[in-house]
Image (cartoon, rainbow, N blue to C red):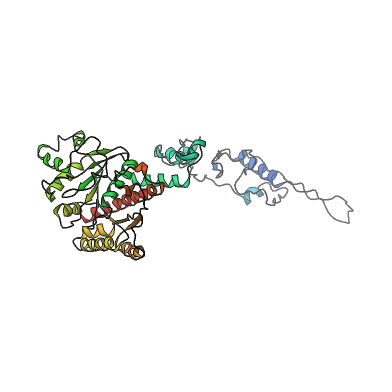
Length: 445
């Protein structure tokens, strides 16, 4: 039996001066009380439960539940004026605001970390629940890792447990870029037909910064026909074997049986840079040809992720051509001097005309300036920068450093901080180009 909706506002006083009544009209009832009363009457007439979702709190509430700040029934606002209910017409409110016969399906919002629950009566009311796709294991890592307080690892900031400085944050960002996963061996060829351009120095430094950032898996391979200087810029560390010894013993090595420890007899492990170096012989026996380079490179790439190839000055040599044909990234060291800039530009022009692969290497090459103290010619930098910027991808400048100019084995921990920062930028630029070239090589193949 329906509950009769009675008057919610007192009737107006009878007016008329003829009767001489002095009664005044009483004030109307508040709007929220009127809305709650109407909702209670409709709840009594329609006992079926309804679901509504409050967007702010995502709570499922039955209509008419007494909660502060939440409207009890849709369609009524607290700041609106109450409508008059005429005496003797209890159905006036229901006629003006009819109740829908069937409830509207409501889609509940479930966050990735919440287990969706089945609300009571949801199946009967037609509530559409989102399909549970499982727990997202990356949510915690993505949300919580940035919230961890990073602390400085060097300097006085580390003593006080403070946040790292901007320079340390930049260094960690560059090292993160050098730790990219290539998915296959990467060969970085360092080339310039001009001698004393800094090829060996940059090969050792590049292998060092990559070895520190990647935790190993880097080898500096000296691809010289005869008498390279990498043996003078690296530590011996107990081995005097060279590339020639390695080539001579290749015939006795089966790739399936060779172990990484077997290569330890031919490489020099550099503990400061966490990389290995294979140097050429200082005595004349036989020049390294193209087939020998390819055989040595094929065996090295089985055990090293990154191979930095230091080339000689003869770009027409078979070993030089074999290295360029197998390169992933081309690095061109130079000095801001016309005698170094001109041969490098000529090499890039000749190389770009050979094949689409060579042209891609030239267009994405990394040019690195390796000037020592008082080596740069005034005006050469301003002339060379626009030219190399149009030919290559990136130009990096390494500041002069007394440890590099000392003509002794290069130890990364002996370099100046600004030199290390420039070398980190150099290594990050090479890794970015390597990722770009690997995608381009897949399209060319």
